[in-house]
Image (tube, rainbow, N blue to C red; front, side):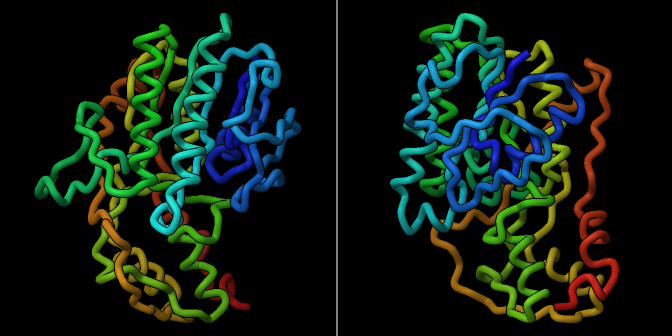
Length: 313
């Protein structure tokens, strides 16, 4: 069994490769163009490596394979606001190129597109308690989420036109080891460690749903090897906190040591709330005899902030 993983040197892609090779006997090929947020050292196993942009990947580069899992993407919303073009190129043109390559592979079992809960837009717009299931309309708020929504539609169009077997997963916010420092949780940790102020958008009331990258990797792997095909599956945890609450929890765990907040102007078009309905995932896991345990973000905070000396310079 041979698996192509694009964006495999990034945060979530490397977690997925590590999970696969910890639990399965496979040949894994990592494709990554090694941008600022990629690091080969994130991968703890020996894998074949192709350093190349997914926009330029050819069938000859990849050879024969059974699965292609596309993690490769520009993903930082702020960057998409300042310059959206790299997001259009990587997330749309790159996905299109991978589809053109994959659909000509007669041995392909499944093309797995890794998407995001952001394609559903701001749940705050729909009222209290609304969660997005897989039938929810796509309503992107940023060039990032719009490019991911477009990529999802390209995958489904390729299935409709050419019969490409696919799976799209839409996941909530990930946390865990090797996350790039620009993201919210590592930014908090680094700010405290360096005695700097934690930048907080607006009033800090924005709500996100959180899942550990290793749990996300496990669910993606289970879905990949399952009979589920030509469908969209949400991957959520049900664990939701406002940014304010996240910082308050960390403040409590550190006794306030080093926790200083700086309010910054809110992001343009900033979604107030993301919230997934993941009942479909739960039903699938029950059918294949798997449990839905997810590492709680508070357990992760215990690991990071449980001892005050953990944040000493």
